[in-house]
Image (cartoon, rainbow, N blue to C red; front, side, top):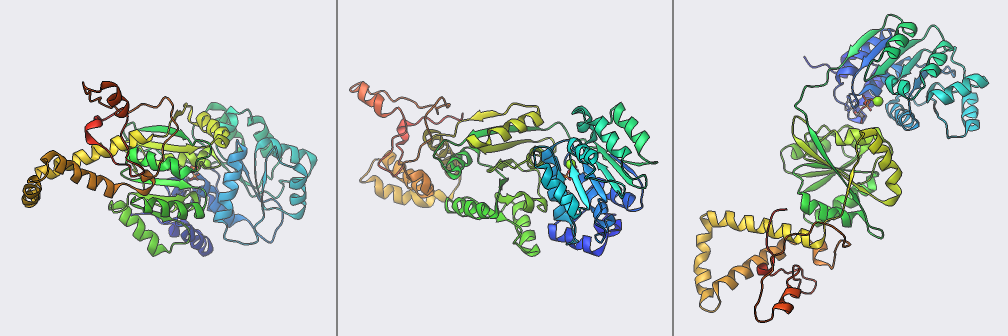
Length: 487
Ligand code: ADP
Ligand code: MG
């Protein structure tokens, strides 16, 4: 039997909101934690990132909050400011009551503003332990009416040295409250805290599916100054040839613009955003699953309801504003023992975020050069060669032999073949490649170019055949000068 959100005990208003968000089925941790919290019990949740913990505690929390009461009724503690903001955003998305007041309290932001908001009345506080303590000690935050305290990523709060602050906060909050503690791991200090501060908690554990070890190849491309990201993406797509990909962007507008440009360049791609009807969304997902569309351009919000994984590529066209979202995005590739590729386009302003991501991944990300013209052209030629071989293996080509015979009366068979190839190459060549485009030179791996040495005029010929020869802006290629070798 599949569990639905309907049989977890949530209100109609909440179910409606979930449908709007495109959440069709509760995750495992949601199936277990939601009814338990709604029954009034404390919960200990152990599961990895990306298992849907935020909704697991936010939905029952929203059911508990009395919007007529302006005192703080729910507190969510998180280890970092980014996470607090992310959780607060998620709670706002889930909120089905319009009169809900929620406040994020973190260091690095004006405490006066936070105090003013608290004075006006706030029902849900999301914050980091340090700032919460500050506000408690000043007497601006009172937790005596608290109904629910949530410790999100408790083990991270421990490793960041916040555990004593967390205990202090719990000591100062209402004894009538429920408490939920979520942690990926359960070190001794966390188990002690649970013993001392939670009341006969129900433990919910989500086993990670035991898939074979997977690998995600990560590449970061630095977009050169003065370039638009689209110019960088095109050659990357040529080289990578994703079988199935989601391209993540920040805004709906970028999603539409990028989709248009990629479609113009002949890519099989569509956009996915909140304005699509349920029917349109389902249709898009179906076409994607069937392989009729290769790529989807989506915003994070829209992608939440997008039930596709096992992608060959995840492309971060825009970086998200927090590391968790990044982890969640790239988790859609490299599933079930397969290798996946995660690509990020970054600009100099993204350096800080990139470093945060590296810290979170505990991995250095290799910064690659944008593939240059010669690489893109060599790849296209290699593909052309494969297609020619496939056609040679077929039978239909026999019907063109009379035409070749006829032309042979006047032209050399090699020239005829070359002309036919040029026609195919030009026809498939996207507009952007026909312009004088090239990536800035640098120490990028060059495609292997075979030199055709001409004894008579060696020097000149060498100069001409160093790279693919272009004819004006048409991007024509002389086959004899390019050695095709898979990199
Ligand atoms: P965790 O806190 O366990 O790391 P999150 O709560 O941040 O995970 O959820 C990860 C992602 O999954 C978010 O983008 C969230 O919107 C999405 N998500 C969570 N639950 C569901 C669901 N039932 N259906 C669809 N998407 C979901
Ligand atoms: Mg989380």
